Amino acid sequence: MASDPSLLVLASLADGEKHGYAMILDIETFAGIRLGPGTLYGAVTRLEDKGWIRPVQSGDRRQPYRITAAGRRQLEEQLAGLERVVTAGLRRLRHV
Image 1 (cartoon, rainbow, N blue to C red):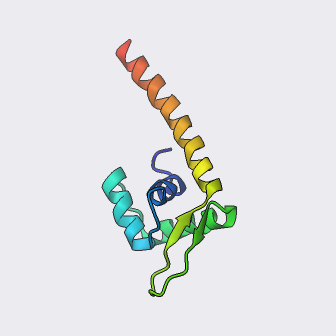
Image 2: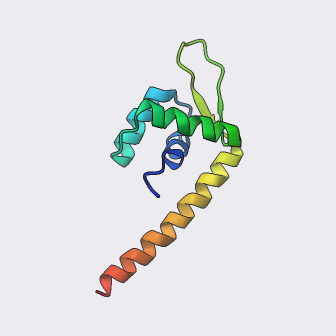
């Protein structure tokens, strides 16, 4: 779940626009997971197709992306689901 590339990309873009390499570095920093370019851009394409992220005009050769309002809602839903799993798992571990 937490290693899902789409979730990681949405989480990375939640605090601002980033191009691919910046997302790779950010995800590695906050999640400890290094996505390869193929995995990253596969997720970017899927997220763009769903309307959850969009490319941003740039004068640079690198293409930055931005999370959309729909993408932000999707991220919030996914994180709420993860929070429920984490809470239940931690509660159960304390009772063992």
